[in-house]
Amino acid sequence: MNHLRGPLRTLPKNPRYFTNDGEHAIYLSGSHTWSNLQDMGITDPPSPFNFSAYIDFLKKYGHNFIRLWHWEAPKWRYSLDRPFSFSQPHPWKRKGPGLARDGKPKFNLFEFDETYFQRLYHRVQMAAENSIYVSIMLFEGHMAQFAAQGWEFHPFNSENNISKIHCERLDYYTLKNKEILEIQEAYVRKVIDTINDFDNVLYEICNEAGNYSTEWQYHFIRFIKSYERDKPKQHPVGMTFQYGGEQSGNNANLFNSPADWTSPNPEGGYREDPPLNDGRKVILNDTDHLWGKGGNPQWVWKSFTRGHNPLFMDRIVDLTDRTITWAGKARAEDIPKAEEIRKAMGLTIQLAKRFNLAEMLPLPDLASTRYCLAKPREAYIIYTYDSNGEVRVDLHNVTGEFHVEWIHPVDGSIVVSNNVQGGGLRIFKSPLKEDAVLLLYSSKRR
Image (cartoon, rainbow, N blue to C red; front, side, top):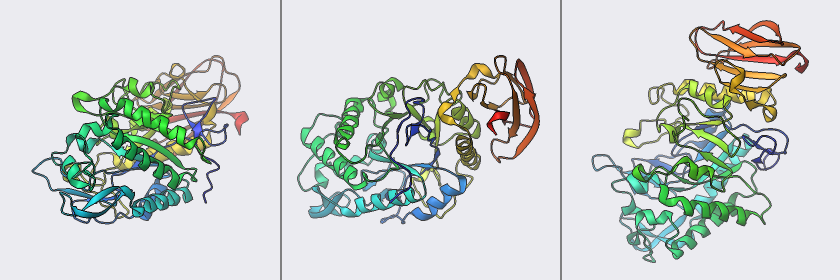
C-alpha cells in the first residue's frame, strides 16, 4: 500500500530525528495549509480543495511533510465585520431530527459520517504514494477561543446535536465532562482504525488550545499510545503550542509531556535564534506557532543547523478573509519570502539525504557563525548570514583533506572551492554576495 518501510519512531542514537529502521534519520520539512483535509472557505458549500495539485506542489519543492488540518465547526467568523467561513465534511452525521443553528440538520454524535473518514484515508494514501508524511490534527482549539461566532455552531453546543450534549466552549478541551470525553475517545479510535495501516502517519492532539488543555492533551497522548499498542503499527504523537492569549501554555508543558514531538512557541528564540535541540523531543519548528503568517529562509537554515525540522504555514491567501483556495499555485504576495522559504526547505531535505544526519549534531562552537551541524572529522554543514561572508571553522583536532562547497541557500547553486587540510583554525570566504551554506566533507567520504 505504501513504500515508506515502516512507521516513524524516535531515532535512539540521535533523538532529534525520527527513523523507520532504527539506523537512518528521517528529516521532515514541508508546507501545510488550512483546507488540505476539509474544504474550507467563505462560500457554502466551500470550493473543493485540489489535493492532487497540492501534492504536486509539494513535490515541486521536494517537501516531505504536511499537517492535515481539522476544523470542528461547520460555520464561524472571527469578528462581526468579516464574512462567515464554512467547512465540510465532519466526523459525525448530520441527519437530524431538527435543525442546528446554521440551518442544517443537527449532528448525531453517536454516528460517524464515513465521508470524512474515507477522505482522510484517501488523502493519507495519496501522500504515502508520494513519500510524504502527514500529521493528523485531531482537534482544533484556536477557533473556539477567538472566533466571535464559532462555538455557536460547534457540534458540541447543545443547539447543534440531537442528544442535547453541551459544554462550555473551553471545557471541551478539558477532562471535566466524562460523556464528552467518551465521544472524543470514540472519534480518536475511529481515526486510528481508519489509518493505522499507513507508515506515513503522525498525530497532533490539538492546534492552539490554551494552557487549560494541558492534562486533556496529556490524556490523549497516552490514550493513542495505549490504543495503538495492540495495533499492527504505532505512530508518533505530538503536542504543539498552546496558544490562548493570557491563557497560553509555555514550552515546558510541551517538553514535559509524554509526546514524541513538539512545535514550540517563540519563547527561547525559536524565531530569530533557535536554541539547540537537546534531544528531549523531535522538534517540528513551525512558522504557524512562531509568527502565524511569517518566516524567512534564514530561519529555515538556522532551524536546520540547530537540529530542528522546519515547517511552513503556507496561507495561500491572506488571513484577513479566512479564505483558502487551491489552484496548484500560491500567490507570492500573500506571505513575504514564501517562495524563498519553500525552496530553502527543499534544499535542507536534499542535504539531509546527502549526508548521514543520524550521526550529525548541532555543534555551534565549531563555527564562528554558530550555525553548524556536524559529524567532526567527516562532515560539516555551516550556515553563514554575515554580509562579509567570512566563516572561521575549528578543525584543530581533525586530520586529512576536506572538500569545500558553497551553496546558495535559496536557489541551490553550488560553487566549489579548493580543498583544505584539517589541523587548525581555517578561515573561509564566501564567493556568494549574501547568505551562504558552507559544506566541508572528508575526501574519504567520496
